[in-house]
Image (cartoon, rainbow, N blue to C red; front, side, top):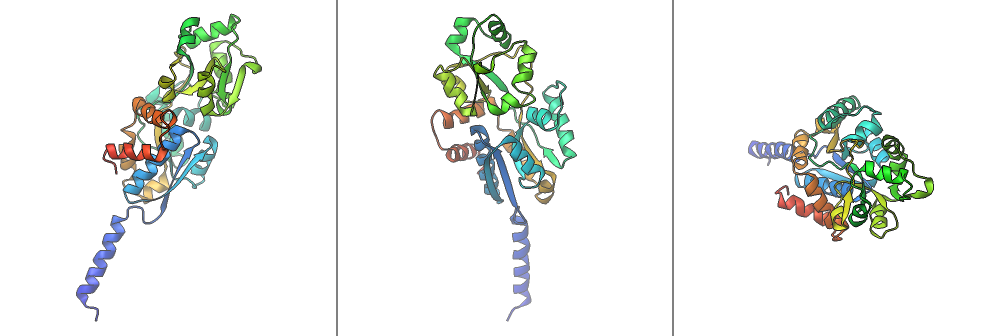
Amino acid sequence: MITLKKLASVATLAVAMTFSGVAAAETIVVGGKNFTEQQLLTSMTAQYLRGKGYDVDNRAGMGSAVVRSAQENGQVDVYWEYTGTGLIVYNKVKEKLGRQEGYEKVRELDMEKGLVWLNPSDANNTYALAMQASEAKAMGIETLSDMAAAVNGGKELVLASNAEWYAREDGFRPFAKAYGFKLPRNQIKRMDSGLTYTALKEGEVDLALVFATDGRIPAFDFVLLKDDRNFFPDYAITPVVRQDTLDNNPGLDEQLNVLSGLLDNEVMSRLNAQIDVEKEDIEKVARRFLEQNDLI
């Protein structure tokens, strides 16, 4: 016989299950781009949210435009984007904005599309050009203006760039225009992002497009050329979430902000190096970071 006491117990259990399973109502799809840092952030976020009780679908390895489109279409709930990319590529903002101004602008514009930029991390993975430290010293090149002067003076420097930056609106062409130099097409080698580091390390090129938080920069004894004309915008790494997802998962924003608050250039460079230089597994690097910071 089912007593009133048993019915009350069952009802209490049902209520408890409803509120303890923070993501019981839906699966949170965590997306990411197709390079080391993004794969790391995707794994870190997926593991962190699973530890919080969410049902998570990890979809790493997408192209930049693909993951953005997937989020706008509701196929991806959260991924880490860069403020400069959000402003220039997706919102066509051409004016030069400082770090805080840029963040506030992209947050405002994307809010209209149902996308919420949470707290930006202190990690600024802006584009940069690198040289081998010994070669840069020998040629007296410290800044991008020095590099441009060398090219204009007849120095045949070969640049390794990924195909995306070569073609995009905040990429090579406006960069070369800003610094007032030209490179013949046969002095520009387009390749996968990860291969630019190898090409520079092995002396196949003189310059390489790199990401400022990449751990291979110090490991391979590269030097970043100073952006003395401030061409490159701020690329603060920030979690971006669909508003619908936040509405359906109260507290998700605060949880992701905790993770964002732990990231800066030094942290990202160290973690990236563990993967790209020390050849550690991405999932293990992500999990160890979460464990060391008591997030799982």
